[in-house]
Image 1 (cartoon, rainbow, N blue to C red):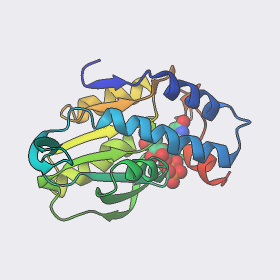
Image 2: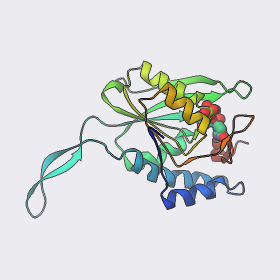
Image 3: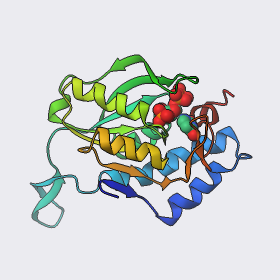
Length: 209
Ligand code: PRP
Ligand code: URA
């Protein structure tokens, strides 16, 4: 699929299977999401521009690769996005962070905004939007809309699970935003949940069911 990468790494798939299991505890779910986020972060940052700088190793001078440009922004779609964010910040500790607070209205499945805070210079940075679930895509589309309104032009979207319906809607609304995911599941059910899925990601992370 154009602009969509499925990370089929065995470690990602193994951890995802444990997360899907309804008997997995809240503590294990949270730990696995953090572990998977390291592996997904590795994939979504593949292809970042490099430049070089001159350093002195203990042996000699060398021109060594280093990341080019301004620090990345990780934009977490609250609440569940924070489960991916924590691990990603372990790998890229200098990244800036945006928070986009959205919840799904359970009747209409429309996304409702309740919070937005982002660095002021989004236009100069690569913005990686993180949310474990891409279901109808209403939340992802709105999050990217808001970030673009604030100047972001270079974005990627990272999730753990996607529904085919959500992928289709998101790539139509934002064809310039590549998507990275660990799985494209079978479908959405009549309540807008991904199946087979893993249930409600926020509830499973925080034990709020
Ligand atoms: C979940 C998930 C996404 C959204 C995906 O959040 O984390 O943000 O649903 O569904 P969509 O693609 O149909 O919009 P939820 O609204 O349950 O909020 P939470 O993270 O606070 O639990
Ligand atoms: N949000 C979730 O957390 N899970 C789904 O399956 C769909 C939306």
